[in-house]
Length: 185
Image 1 (cartoon, rainbow, N blue to C red):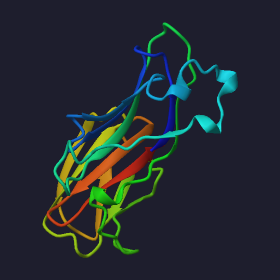
Image 2: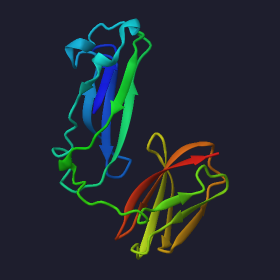
Image 3: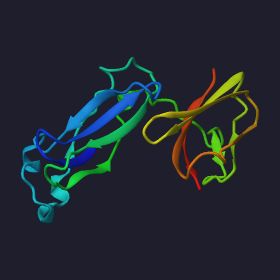
């Protein structure tokens, strides 16, 4: 991950967390201005490209190999001091994260329409079999709804009662698992 966390030392933190269920979160990285020497005491007017630093996120020591996790980025701050904040330039997965399987074009699970107004449709590839569990989560990671249906080429679900905003749709079956961002308008 290439980033800069120009936050108040010892009080404000930038966290990278991971979860297998989006309920229980494990910290895989915590950063403040003391993490790298060139981040200490930087005034907003002096923020520039040279401040980006690379940090390696150690998922391997927190989760068994092959475990699928959701990742969230969280900035915790207080009103005690004003600082620039956290800027993330890139997140590049390591080849050791178990990303050796490549999904071919046309094999992805697709959510449409997106943004969605009333009803969302999930289009599943032919290889998805058995019961499908669909979890809808808000941006804080709180589970809003769980839907269980038999696998089909298209699964529709009503979202009229959801407030406008961004959600994560997590689909799991015996043969597939995928997380998709859904924008409710």
